[in-house]
Image (cartoon, rainbow, N blue to C red):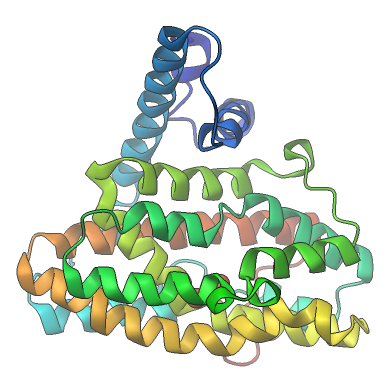
Length: 307
Ligand SMILES: [Fe+2]
Ligand SMILES: [Fe+2]
């Protein structure tokens, strides 16, 4: 059923309304993609799902408006668009955030644990996001998304699956991943990724957002990996970050070449959607880093060195 008390909070971007909205959305998202057998009143289920979609789309639309100035100059020519997109890795929201050199060099074990709690619980599952997004995409894009998904699946080897790899690190730190432990900004990031992957009107936004993750993760992962090593976390538990520091460089190059290029070549209007998706993802990430720095009482100085 529609819950106006909750859904009207969608445009909130700070304070208690923002927090209440994102917590409620995360709570509902948690059960949303669970495989089920029929039970209860199916009409209630349909209405609840419609309310969820309505609320999340209202939120996405409000953020699209907020990031308007950042996406006003997205080129619609293929080469110029790819140059614009790749430049986000340097100058997009949240890039070279001082949080990461600090995690590498100074964070205590408990501070690293708190950071991982945020990251693990906000993580919507890259594999499932790719699987949802690739539906009915043209062949070339679909093939690269399949290769990416296969890597997420450890190429058929349980030990190499990325999701369980992150779970091993979380277990080592005894991470408490209940949504109550997680700040609203991290929930908003996960909620947004699910919203983009679940609503076909944002299929190309989702493509852009997933590509932005591949493109920007390696720099952050390398800092975190070195921080974990400094804290004497064993190699097997660090594997999620050591792997992504390297593998996502290749994933990103392939994504931009095999997914973004042919999709934009086919229809130039997709450039705007893909670009917006990337900025939506990076904007949410930047808000997380800002929030984490506040928690760690770090000043927002530019880092001393490149990420
Ligand atoms: Fe991965
Ligand atoms: Fe990847």
